[in-house]
Image (cartoon, rainbow, N blue to C red):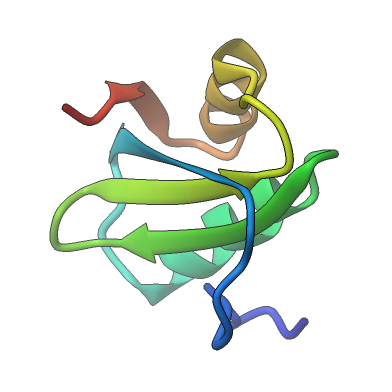
Length: 84
């Protein structure tokens, strides 16, 4: 995966969870979050939507919200919760 890859072209089986993330403003933010979240064990795909301020994370099992929040926060952004 290149540094600029932010999602997958093919559908991925798993649990898709949408999170609200603040602080994302550009393509670099998108690439950084895709890379950092994508490195978490069990994450199958990451799709970052800058305009909506949301990140969709597809995981093999139920996602660990606390771990994902820590990863996002460590990357310099704020995961504010699951989107409703």
